[in-house]
Length: 220
Image (cartoon, rainbow, N blue to C red; front, top):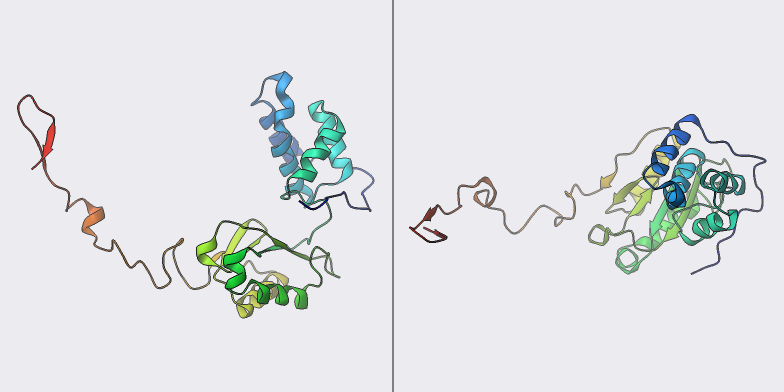
């Protein structure tokens, strides 16, 4: 695992928003008071949703809230790669999957589009609106290549529609998540090819069950 460090430039302070603090208290209440530190991961996530990333002042605030040494909060934040330790784009954080299935299906070309439109990976764009990075398996291998943008999956991507998605975000639109070839979930492209008979699901093909005297139910 690569070394993960806090950003060199840090804000002067951090404060929980009213909504974030209320949700943090809700998480803390799930644990015995002497185990309140168990809420550190969800509260780190809440802070990231509020700020877009996790700063050093935020880590200190979480430690104070949980009665937890700051270094312990830092250990958690640096261990899990889902926590962003530097500012990310205010409009979109694009995480392109680079694991083998996506790579074989064109992930490199998607990354080239991101480089061209946004800049180097893991670097805030010049306008502060976009960040992109390469990540490992996001668990949507059947719909490769794919990327997670903010909280949603965009699947079956091509360089052309990846470029369009970025342009749409830049224009203030909200591109619809999901497959770009119209497939449902992880079914084959073009639709299901097996188990297509409706009778398998509407109950009409189910055999009637009858019970013989002093016996278990058996098929008719």
